[in-house]
Amino acid sequence: MGSRIGGLMFQPVKIAPSILSADFMNLENDIRMIEEGGAAYVHVDVMDGHFVPNLTIGVPHVKQLKRITKLPLDVHLMIANPLEQLPWFLQAGADILTVHAETLEGQWLDRAIQLIHDAGALACVALKPNTPVDVLSTVIDKLDMVLVMSVEPGFSGQSYIEGSEQKVAQVAAMAREVGNEALLIEVDGGIGEKTVERVCAAGADVIVCGNAVFAADDPKQAIHDITVIGNASH
Ligand code: DX5
Ligand code: ZN
Image 1: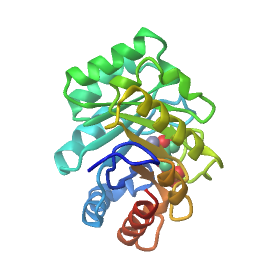
Image 2: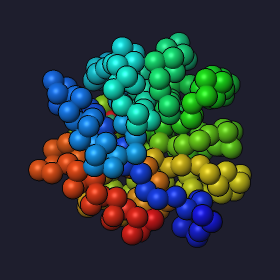
Image 3: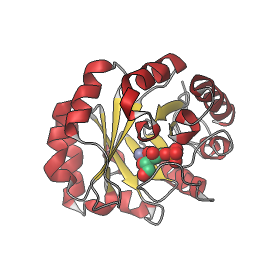
């Protein structure tokens, strides 16, 4: 392991399939499938119908997921009041907890990161497509991961917003400036075989895939192929 020119410290690309696109009636089967396919994390999209229009799953589901898989749970909170709810998600077994920068200003973002770290989980802050990376300037040195949204949060199956890879590069540059070489950069939305190359070239380490995995004819093969393409440009 060593540092490199394009991004931060070199780490192989990790795939985090988003179960929002899985078969909820056969979720355990789908979890086994992504485990066998080489997924690194299970990406869990929590939506409250306020911060985003959609409404998905919550604390009880995270608790049950924790019981059936050893894969780390990468919990992406798209909720308006993360400070109130994040202790419950941490208790339920979130290994990585992501809060949106747009929901927590100033000291409250610090507070959220502190609570996540106190629980022994990894802290991640997500940015919607129109949120500038500057909002991370006071916390980037404390973060384990930054999530760059490459679609408007709310739904799976949307198209990648062109140019999102530039924001990945900006986050990598900002992290390098403060010496946070271990920071992971995750990209979420519209990523598949066609788009993974450009985000990994810009410095992305963790790739969220909803439809590109679960709507593929062969999801295990899709995880493999996306990983290979991502690593080739990473
Ligand atoms: C969108 C969610 C994503 C979504 C990804 O708000 O955060 O995780 O499920 O799905 P795809 O990969 O299909 O865009
Ligand atoms: Zn997500």
